[in-house]
Image (cartoon, rainbow, N blue to C red; front, side):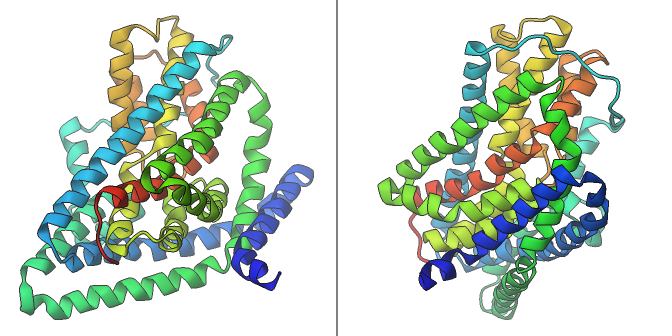
Length: 401
């Protein structure tokens, strides 16, 4: 009994915090504004700790790889795994909306939409991958630029040989320090996530049973099926029955963190801990999970299909036209890349979808509302999918820890 409490104490306390937060959000929504700052403090501490962890984890993982061929193979297998998972999620959602169509959906003028950025696409691509100042790298809003910089730093550290040894020791030490810092911050998770979950329940809960019930119900049913069935299948493909058991034993804590914070970025520390317990080598987990947090999003893929489907219902066009389906898959892959690992980070992708399909203004509020309301489950699929992706990569690229 003591061993069980020791192994699952973190999950038990987190569940307790989320349960208390949910009750407060339901029975005393007016009280939520007084405890939400506790959740904000926790998330802020988590965010400022995760940013340097991403840099040290990725650069150290690349710099410490012994064989050049292994490095290239990891990157290739990781990219193919991400693409396979994203497209599988999108196609599965298309099948679901085909066999279980919804109707009676229209937009709402009550939501405030964000103005589209007037920059050219060239400037947007530049801003996705790079920043103009070094200090701007260490912002969670520039995660892709930070990943590119960390990637190049780790590669340069490898190329410098003996002269770069002190720097390689520094980034290895920095990675260990930042891991320990995150362990300290995560001690506050039951309080911080409980407070934040109370806020989520109080603000979003009533809308779940309103006008958007049908498309939301379809998304949540499809998402839960994908979470349970497809992730189990991926884990089995990666490591057999033992892989399925290891995955579900260690996926609970990241799942609870994801549904509480609605942030893949905030879930990354829990993912790294889970990957370590599963037995995934650091050289793989420290690449796949941080990069996957930005580039690999099963939940965003599924929500993109649902939002495009609902938008087509509103304007009365045929979503299942082959040309529209192919374009939807292309948009979904891109949306899954540009949707940042932060709460409601999919607005850029939504504006892309609207501009590509040239959707009318009345479709925009519906897309925004659905994007917000599916965020909890989408975040779970996005973030926990990175663990099973790391298992998948480890299946095809064998390296030592």
